[in-house]
Image (tube, rainbow, N blue to C red; front, side):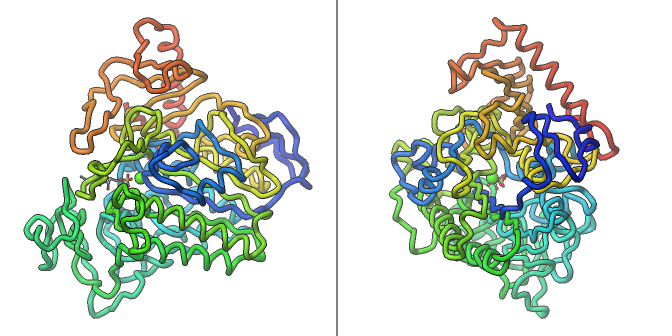
Length: 519
Ligand code: NG6
Ligand code: CA
């Protein structure tokens, strides 16, 4: 495991990477642009370059063909907020209270002053942006001021520019935020948001299902916006409300604009798509095109966003100067609260590929996700089977640009740049995954251990096995990729080893007031 002591050894002249056991001198520090395209709820089996046969994603496939396609990448969590928290901070979300799926009016989860991937890149001279889904809270604990200056937010933790869906598409407020302000807000029509009681007098999905263009299946029965009822109540802000059918075009356009405006100096773009999260409302260009219903259609829409980003980079002659990463925040779900025919029109499509479970699950369907790294002329096209985790983006890219990380920050992130860039196929020592109930699993070598949990084993609403079991679970992923045979009782030595390691890792982060151990 990479030691924090590492940072003490760094001098302006050399960087010693213990993980890769190599010395990089200052002259080899490079500052390519970094674009992370982060899809939402896209499963391992949802795209054709990962084996989907019922849907074709030619543009993501192109990226995979010309880049490095990983088969063993793990998001840190089976839901969005914790995966994103870990990606940006290099710290497992389960170390901090309140990092489960965030409400639409949650306050900022990453506090100003905390070291983040963008704050490190900014130190190295990068211009940094987040465009798309945020879902990490905005504003102070007293309540986000949607009508005034929204602070703290991404600009206070290292992003120079942001254009946000504040939480998720299915949560109010259904407006975009640009830098610190709601876009197109008419001050005479202020926004009010509540997650506890009705506000305003607009119809809800619960009381007026006849007004809905897409019926709900569970939850999502509060204020109706654009014919779709959401989680949470909202009034006002009429001119600012988004039209779901246009979200992909709008945020892809903002991402392209950011690239164009920063083409001459290093930039970091975290482009966080709304697709393929619910509500799945494709633009007319994609509606009905996949044959799998709206869920398939928004996969095509996502593929188109990738195409547009790549065409922009190409037109600006930036392909050789830009690392493009494509991945997802957690595994797939079909019915996530709206009757959008994802189940009925599945047609044999396997969103989680060969893996058990899906979104919310401790099984690999929850967290093993696509991961493609493309860097023209620099990353050799091919496949990597190395065990990798999104937790390592922070330290790996910080090392690449020659920036050190304070001792008490990014404590879970390791420098695995050589693996990410395909120069090595060395497995990470271990990977930790968190399901929706905060049950943790640890992968090491061929083994996967899931700690005992008394939480429900199955979520009937979404029809997904959550991987919770009051007994320890141990799977041999080499012989049992689908996690069917729990061998914990016949392999107690490995159970003991992995449960001990997991407890040690939990203890490691218990350093400050705000940190805590879940169990
Ligand atoms: C759940 C929502 C689901 C989705 C999820 C967050 C209900 C019944 N379900 O609570 O629809 O919004 O939260 O998904 O409300 S995530 O990908 O952002 O983590
Ligand atoms: Ca998600």
